[in-house]
Amino acid sequence: MSATGRIEEHPILGPLPERSVVTFRFNGVPMQAYQGETIAAALLAAGIRTLRLHEEKGTPRGIYCNIGHCFECRVTVNGRTGIRACLTLVEEGMEITAGEILPTPLKKGGHPA
Amino acid sequence: MTDVLIVGAGPAGLSAAATCARHGLSVRVVDEFMKPGGRLLGQLHEEPDGTWWNGIEEARRLYEQAVGLGASVACGVSVYDAARGEEGWVVSTTEGILEAPVLLLATGAAETALPLPGWTIPGVMSIGAAQVMTNVHRVRVGERGVIIGVNILAVAIARELQLAGIHVDRMVLPPRNPVTQEAASPYHVMQSLLRVAHLAPSAFIRYGSRLVKSDPLLRLAVRCYPAGGVKMWRMPIHLRTAAVEILGTSKVEGVRLARVSPDGEPLPGTEHDIPADFVCIAGGLHPLAELAAVAGCPFAYLPELGGHVPLHNERMETPLAGLYVAGNITGIESAKVAMAQGAVAGLAIAEHLGRLRDRTALADAIAHVKRVRRSATIQFHPEIGRGRADVERMFQEQGISGK
Ligand SMILES: Cc1cc2nc3c(=O)[nH]c(=O)nc-3n(C[C@H](O)[C@H](O)[C@H](O)COP(=O)(O)OP(=O)(O)OC[C@H]3O[C@@H](n4cnc5c(N)ncnc54)[C@H](O)[C@@H]3O)c2cc1C
Ligand code: FES
Image (cartoon, rainbow over all chains, first blue to last red; front, side, top):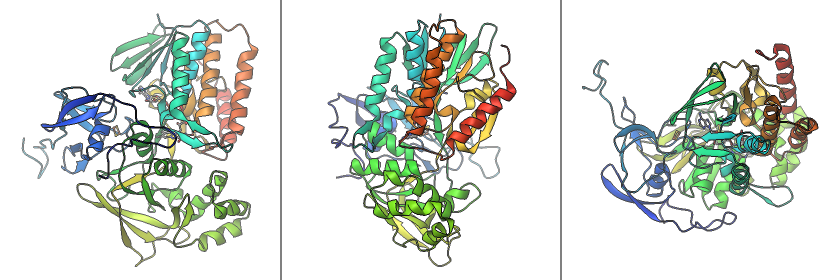
């Protein structure tokens, strides 16, 4: 059993209901999720924790609050940047890419444009 | 035309929506989460009588009630501004501008961060994030976790992770720094932990709850606290061990711990590393009140209520005409209190808009909030009653403008 994945059975909440499968791409790689899952949940279930690289430092970041408050989970969805993965449901055919390092040409020792 | 716009579809917002709709008002609720219910959704507690408080079921009941009475509830909509216009409140959302004569802010609470080295590594998350991932999304957060921060929410959620079959290795204190303060002091944490002893099936803790009343005994208990921690639901809770750093580069690999003095001072030479693939940070809750601030509402700072709260009275009115607040935005309490406050706000709004015939209903609802507060299973602050009295007094001193 992998470390992440879905909690199929729960002693109080019961079994996970049947849901249809949705196909999407993350950083160009085709992946599957279930209808009604957030991007963050679907990626974590697939073992992916890194959702972006810090815009300046390039260090990896994942979810922190999971409820829309911290904006740590920003990804690009179908070309739109700054989308919170923890609040956004995966949809069939979605193109999701992790946030990348941005150029900081004016900063000493920063990244070129 | 909307009479009442409500931000937040948690227990407070949904109860208020149902109450307003029942009084013939047209109500619109917006929430940025993808499901109605707010933080109720993740909650799963065993009540002292052995029944389960299942937040998903409670949220469904509240949602169906509000919608059944005619309220409209839109999810996936974020609100980022609220300003007083000519006719009422003008609210900016990700779906455009909404206007209504009455605005109720029921935005709930946010978790307080406890920064420490390594806390941005993927796999580190807030304790509430783990709760939502586990109970709402039903995705495992990892295989072996460490919880940093010992408080009532952490204890409740650790139990929920265990129920879902996720191993929490131990719970430790955060390192001492200017942000963590009392959360890093074994003495203060012991004191607050013993206050929630009734939730714990642990003889040690139950026995310990008698110590709270005697300060010297409490200090002795902290000095003698077992190095291996005290187990609650088979999970060791450490009060004399703190996390000093989270280890890993692209993902969490472990936690560096150190033994600490009874005051939370790390003891040199006691550092050791333990493996983990996820870490939860439990820094407690504070009211999520930014929208009240941008709307121009005056604030009060009351630690008993969780920090800065918009000034309000027991009818849930703020000093700004047509602006109401309910739920955890007014102070950190359990969902049942938030629901009761939502009903009060709904009745006060109905009265304000000339729709309340039975005046005693409002007084009864206010009395009900106090009863629910007194009988709450989970209390986030022992002096909540004093905080509530203080904010009421401060409101009366200030009065309502434009009325
Ligand atoms: C992470 C977390 C876990 C918690 N766990 C527990 C627990 O286990 N047990 C317990 O008793 N209490 C818990 N609480 C306390 C909880 O706040 C109360 O129990 C209760 O849910 C408060 O109800 P509410 O209606 O005031 O707010 P909430 O239930 O928080 O609902 C507020 C809603 O407002 C929405 N919102 C906020 N800002 C905006 C905006 N700008 N635009 C649009 N929508 C917005 C949110 O998405 C949310 O759905 C928890 C709180 C948090 C933050
Ligand atoms: S994880 Fe905090 S906003 Fe998404």
